[in-house]
Structures are given as structure tokens and as C-alpha cells.
Length: 331
Image (cartoon, rainbow, N blue to C red; front, side, top):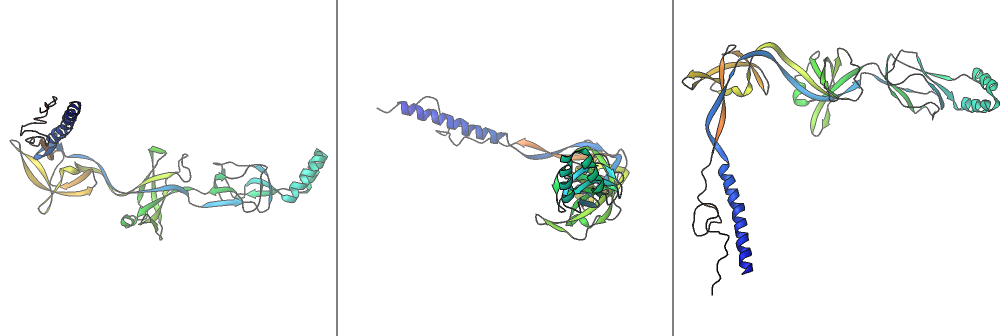
């Protein structure tokens, strides 16, 4: 008897689950007649862009190394400092000088000064005007000529990686807008001044480097920052604009729906200029302030199924024939 009651309870739960699924199916929708809303042609700015990612890099990066092996005696500049060609940025003691000075230091300050005057330190000088972007050593460190002491940059630029499919649209002098991941609310304008000839295969996509020189390098620019670059192909500040969803392909060109009175619409041909994924420019067929109907698809419920798969006894509705009472055992 107990087993029969458990089986009946399982059937009730299963019927509820499957019945719920059928109820959900009942609520699912299918497309019906079109509905729409009205927008108006308005004036505004629109631009056609090629989007690319890249980084902030030095235009010319120079590494400064020591000409001798020895000890770093003094560092005179730090990262971010601007230097001029020939400026002394550090002092080095050769290995011999460092050993002599250490021995003289034990003899007292007079002996140390005498040897410092007699055995001069080696100056490390800047080779170009620019900014120190890397200081790679500390005072007192022992190094050899292979160690990079400093890295310098004359100026920072943006290097964007443009897909092969878009590189044909990039031209010299083209304006570009640069936005850094670190400062998403700040935009810097620049111009293309170099398009590299050799591409790179990145995940089976050929990309070409495009260099952009900014009008003014902001203080927050740092080498190797991630940059998002929008190359401005075309731009118009006083254009007639519509949402892209308002325009459809029609016989012979692009068409829109305009109100025709009594809740009806009429199709009208238009000519477009600049087009983006969200907005299009209308160059002919509409005037500022004209109304355009944007059609949307309305959904209506599907017809409810006649019965659940678990219906017992041919009844209608979900779970018909299944009750919470266990059947009486046959005698």
C-alpha cells in the first residue's frame, strides 16, 4: 500500500513538472502582425569609423647602458623626468675605482677625497631629448655593460593594429580619436603619420600597424597603455538623421514608411549618405521634422495544447486523470 502511495505521489510531481512545461510552452510567443512607433528626422552629427585597438608606445625608444662594468655611484634622474642631449643622468665607478675607493674609505675621509679627485667617475649621459620612461637600476648596484640602466622616449604615440579588411580605408593624415582603457572618459585627437608595410598574423587575421601622432601628449599617457582608436573616415556635423532600423531594403533602393492617414503607412524611397550600425544620414527623400514609422514585430501566445503527455484516461487539461489518492488495491 505504501509503495502505491509513493508511486502516485511521483506521478503527481511528474505531471506537475511536465504540465508546467506545457504551460510555459503555452506562454511562448510567435510573430503576428507588425506594430510600430514614430520617429522624426532630426539634425545632428554622424561619423563613419574604423575601430581598432593598440597601445601607447615611444616613437623612438633608446636604452642607456654603462660603458664600463662597475658600481652605480649616483642616479640624477627618475622616471618621468625630461632630459636634454648630453645631460649627465648618472655616475658610474669602474670595478677598479670602486675597489680603490672602498680601500680609501677605510683610511679616512682625507684619503677617500684624494682618491675621488685622482680617479674620476664615469658619467652616463642622455643621447637625445626626451623623457625617462624606465629606471632599471638602483644606487650602489654592481652592473656590467649588458644591463639597461635607463630607457628614454622622445615622444609617445599610439600604435593601432588594423585588420587587413579595413587597412585599405586608412590614409595618411586621417584624423583619429584615441581613448585609453585607464581613462575611458578622456579622448585625445591625433593624425595618422605612418602605415607599416609588413603585417602580422594574429589568430589567423592579418593586421597592419598604423601610427598616430597626437596633437598634444597628455600627462597621463604611459608607455604600453592599451588604446582604443577610432579612425574617422567621414564626418558630418549638420546631417539629417534617422535610426538605422527605420530604413529597409526595397525595390531599387532604400525605403522608409511614412504616415498616410487613418492609421495607414506608405512606402517612400530615400537616399542615404553616411551609415553606421545605429544611425543613417538621409540625403534625399525626407526633410527635417518628417515622421517615419519604425515597424516592430508583435508576438501573440500560441494555442494551448489539448492535453499534457501525462494525461490519464483521455481527460483534458494538465495532469487530468492523476490525483493525489492512490488507487485501491484489487482484492
